[in-house]
Length: 249
Image (cartoon, rainbow, N blue to C red; front, side, top):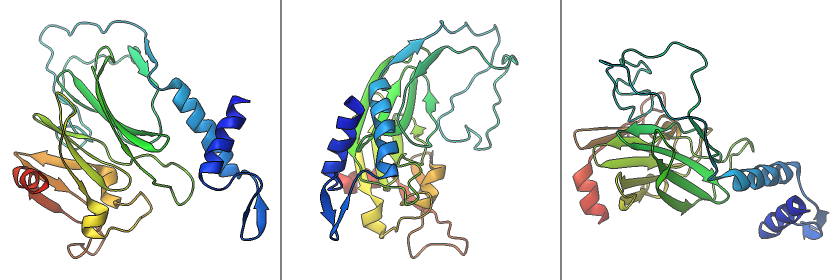
C-alpha cells in the first residue's frame, strides 16, 4: 500500500495519474513510473543508514599513502602509488552507506570523503568521514534531469577536491564550488544556460562524466559547448578559480 500511494502521488505530480486524459486517451502508470517509484522508495528508505562492520586497521609501519582527490586518482591514470597495501581479495568491508542514483565515484582528501548522487528531485553532495562514514555536511539542490532512455537519472561526474575547495558538476551541468570544510557555497554556475549546452547521451554536459581537474587555482573541464569544440566533440574550459569567484560573487 505504501508503494502504491507513493507511485500514484508521483504520477499525479507529473499529470500522469490513472484517469487523467492526455491527448484524449486515459492513461495509467507506465512501466518507467513503476520502476522509478520502486527505486525512489527503496533509496529514500535506505538513504542515511550507515552500517559499520569493523574499525579500520592501523596502517603498517612505513606505509606511504596519498589522497584520491579526483576521478582516476592523483596521476589521473587509476594507478595507486601507495605502498604496503593488502592484496587480500575481496578487501575487508569497514562500512556501508546507502546512496541514490548516479555514476559518480568518491573523492577523498584527508578526513573528507565527498560524493555526488541523486535522491528524488534533488542532487546531493555528501561529505563523510572516510574511516567511520559519519556525516560532515550535506548540500542539496533541485534537478529535473531525465535520462532520455529511462536508465539512470543521476549525476555522471565525480567530485574534484583542490585544497580547501571541492567542485561538482551535476547531470544538468550545474557547477558548484563548495568549501570542503563546511559545505558552504563559494560560487556556482549554470553551464547549460551559460554555453547553451544540449542534452547528450551522458547528460547535459558530455565531458562532465569524466569530472574536472583542478591544479594551482585553475579549473579545467571538458564540455560540449560552442565555439571551442574539437573535431571529436571534446572541449576544454579553463578559468582562474579566483576570477570565477569574483564574477559569481
